[in-house]
Image (tube, rainbow, N blue to C red; front, side, top):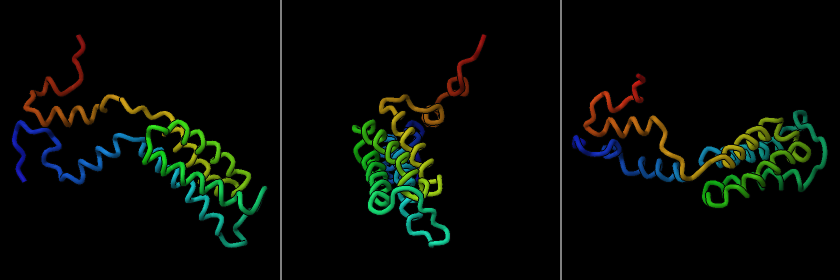
Length: 155
């Protein structure tokens, strides 16, 4: 597939790939994914073999509700980014609550993944300027000279 010289850099990429990048760029993707994976990891450690399981703290229904709430918050962060602040605060609180309710927060790993993901989702801004790599890729797509592509020269 040939790309015209004046076309943007993404013109040669398949439509599915650019569509995925566009969808992922309009939401706190990595934060939501990490919260979802942290909740799933905690849910899986609840089903660990008996010699491995450390049941400390409250057991029973809350052990399943807290990581399930994390999974739901992760999915809602991905699919409803307008309410990301509320969902990320709820996710960090449920991640910290999993320390007492769900095998020490999935043996610390699920709790830490959930906390990091909810912090990423909380700090995400929808109107961020494009990163330098995207700017360079877009500049390469244009017929610009090498002096226009790099950072500004210092005097």
